[in-house]
Length: 394
Image (cartoon, rainbow, N blue to C red; front, side, top):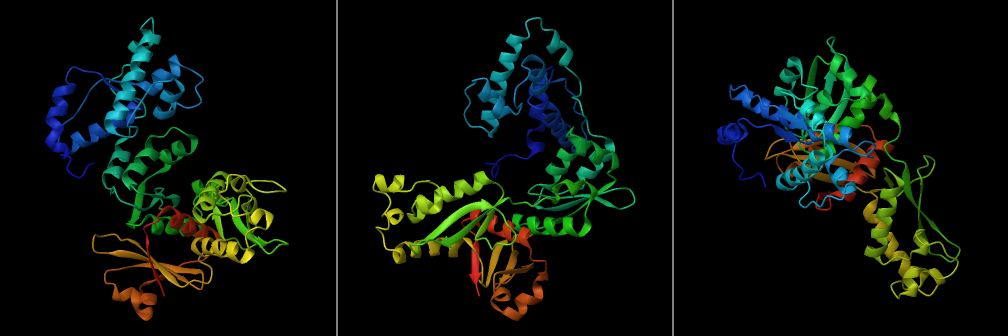
């Protein structure tokens, strides 16, 4: 959508004209206003407009809502909206919400008091300087104190935007980071998978003070298999157990269940033998003639197990030798994640295909990294999410 969009300097004059003598109304106005000011500042122009924040107004006029995010708020208020997360859709939703808030503010006192020249939580000058030096690219970032100590490590598909959020969020952790931050360094990766793997390893290595709450495992549930008394391969979602070897892991039970429902459809599996339908007789799919009858031993176990094995083989890289190819840091570069005998060996970047087809060269460009349950979860989750990844089997 943005490929043919104009640059900011091409529309800056028009923005000044259409907002002249106006009040900017936005959902989370501090964010939109700050971005406008920052872009104008780059052009050497000080942009100032009064503003109204519909988040603040909604909290005053419609209290006790479960969420004040735009999507959830308009849904709970029954406001029809189309094209969410698109400029026109979000703007239209904000207009409808604002009209409702105007109606609710019968005395017009809150809206008069809420108009401000600058929204709350403005960025400090030193925060603006830090953000100005950051790229809007995928990578890992490190937040430092004045003595150089790393206090937080994160990854983002847009480092500049993510640090902006750290500096404007009002939760307890963000406020502490805002007080202590002196510098932000970063490493671009191009690939989100590389960023996730680097973030995981860097947090373990540096143990930053504000990452310590994240030390809990990044996955809670896993997929296991077993053979029942009739010789059928059964699949089971269970709480992750370090003593067992899972096929794949999940961040929570809901994502695990969603995965299993899709697999039942894709591989024509039995609901009973995948733990979805708890019954002592036939499963629901058999009753509507969409299951071949493995649940009541009508389908031969050899035939059924073949499909289960295909699923297991596709969603696990146990004993596999392969390279996952993803985006690189430049247009002519690619990233390579090396798996040997089902073990994550490390990652690197390359420009020419022969570098990954020659094992000696491949091993020389790979930076060795630790293989653990977190890295396995990260890689398996990413492979499930990105269906079009290029994989080279060695």
